[in-house]
Image 1: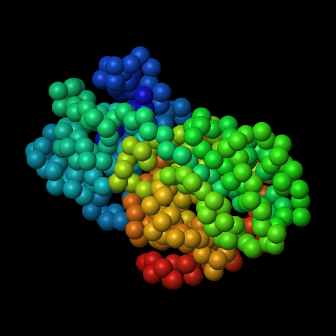
Image 2: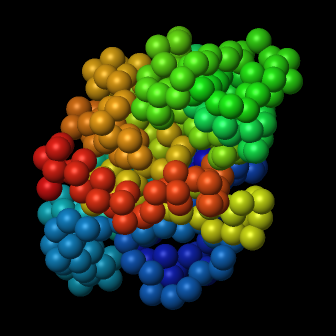
Image 3: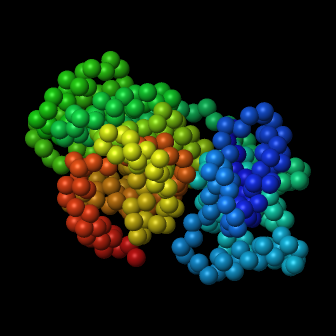
Length: 375
């Protein structure tokens, strides 16, 4: 049972945490909560490092959001009427809902005088239960909260002379807690014995495809997806690897949120030998940030409809083929981030970005924005 507790001020969590967790357990009907995230629109003091806490990411209408947040603080302090919360939430709610969805909760507990107003806005987006603290009668359980569907997931793993790390990458795919998957390794004309490495794994879900000549990453991805049979699709790099619950988290989210077609996560940043930078996490930012940066990262999953409508990866977008694709997806489909970080992204001298330089990649990003008319 994953729970998101929404509060006005994250700074109040230290002295409210025990009571809110106890209330959440009662409402959920369980003794143990699997994961708890706190979301708040401000933070006035520090909280302990073991508490998962997030604030909505605000870049658009920044001044209007600040004014609305102030109005809600005045409502909580009973200095203005409760009715003022409706207008303020009209401004704040989109960012708040995005932040709550990013926690992928089964249950949301809202702690604030405006809780009922926010709960009513959440009902369209959240396939779980929404409650207002101290007012269990205001809770509503939705019939979509439990699903048992497990669509086939296709993972494409492109590689070119990637023998150094690929065993770890393959192993992480096959060790997923989500079992209904296929892994398609596409060898882009490697001089190394990639076929021999793949043969070391005795798993019927694993397939090997080879280009006799090197064609580049976009064409290698396209080859992989032509062989893919999954209803849900993704690809990973031969030098990165998944945590065991990565695919399960993302597949679960897409199955429960049928109006969302693309999901992505935060990720751990590691160094060449997999240590040193292990505690560094790159937090996923909201999809709106695609206008200025590649906020998707290396861990994502999308539906067959995305593949069908957006088409193939562009051979003209080498080094930024992923960003080009995400921008094209965003024009047609709803995307959503998750704050969980079930992926390990490796920085090393052999990576494409390191080989070609960050300035060149940044210039290519600008070309993608111009080509796709991204403001």
